[in-house]
Length: 265
Image (cartoon, rainbow, N blue to C red; front, side):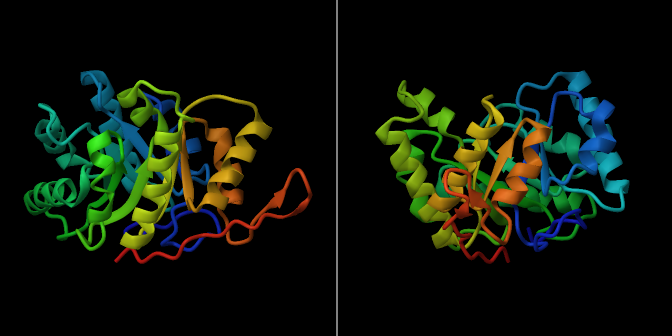
């Protein structure tokens, strides 16, 4: 990603392959997290209490002092949520590299967040445009119909993310249902049109081989990375979405998947 700091691994610095969703208190594993090979980490603070916020700020400060580290993202919750502005204010002492925008509904939501981030940066002595946006798209039926609006909406937009469980809950259907599959495909197309990476959020369990097969399928379909809560998945994600497609475990032949080109500027 364009604003990412120096990272471990061999991917181009503008590529986001892997994002680790951190536990409520990441401090005990901070060094392992920062050196674990993820391209980005995300602090999910939607339901954080005072203790969780203290831990998050401490982690962000520690990360900013590290010589080599993943890009740091924070997920404060929906833009219209009552605590969003207060959450953003709390981050002034330890600004992240980017914000995961919940319930993103096309260009308007990204632009509204961009305006808030411009004020945040000015108040905290940061360069204009220093804070990236990763939009979690298609979380509601209405958001699906706004996917075409992301192209050219903001120079801050660096990622479109798809969470199948969110839309499935909104529709009261299985995550594998046809409407969710359609939204998934449209998110990939929207990211390609916007010139940014598309990542899929994987938060469920499963064995190693099943997870690897799902990641291979995601790459074949056009995703360029994935987010997970399990640190042990990061090397698999990096391999799957690396420059050379890994072998298909069923055939031992190179996987035909490919990465979509993108321009994060």
